[in-house]
Amino acid sequence: AVYHDPCYLGRHHGLYDPPRRVLGAMKGLEVVEFEQSREDSVCCGGGSPRTWLEDDPGQGVADERAAEAVELGAEVIVTPCPYCIQIFEESLNKIDASGIEVRDVVELAACWWPYAPEEEDQTFGTYSTA
Picture 1 (cartoon, rainbow, N blue to C red):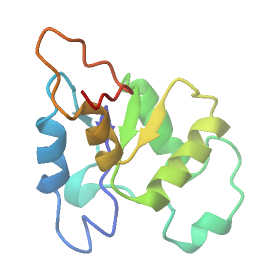
Picture 2: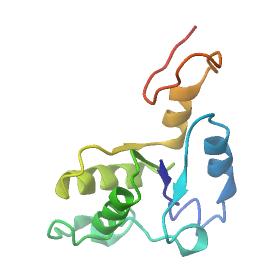
Picture 3: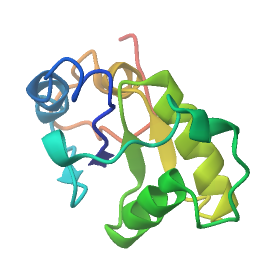
């Protein structure tokens, strides 16, 4: 998984570690960072006027970020922002990176909890109420 810092949570409110702590508590989840993260994170474009522009595939801000996720080998982009989720889903479709999912931090946590016994596989996307 690669974590994206949304503008409102990060730059506007200075909250960088809480989502990372949630992700870090998920046994077996490997999280990598975008090259530009935390205070240096790049806006996905979802909360700006650029969201209304029609960029050529691969040319939008989020397209470049999605391409970086592909380069990092991520299976999922995780962010706690609904605007970022929508923009990244569109970008992944534009650059034909259908193998990568976009999930909210809370949504991903719901896939992991409740904790399964250690001998059970905690495959991404499964959820059990047992």
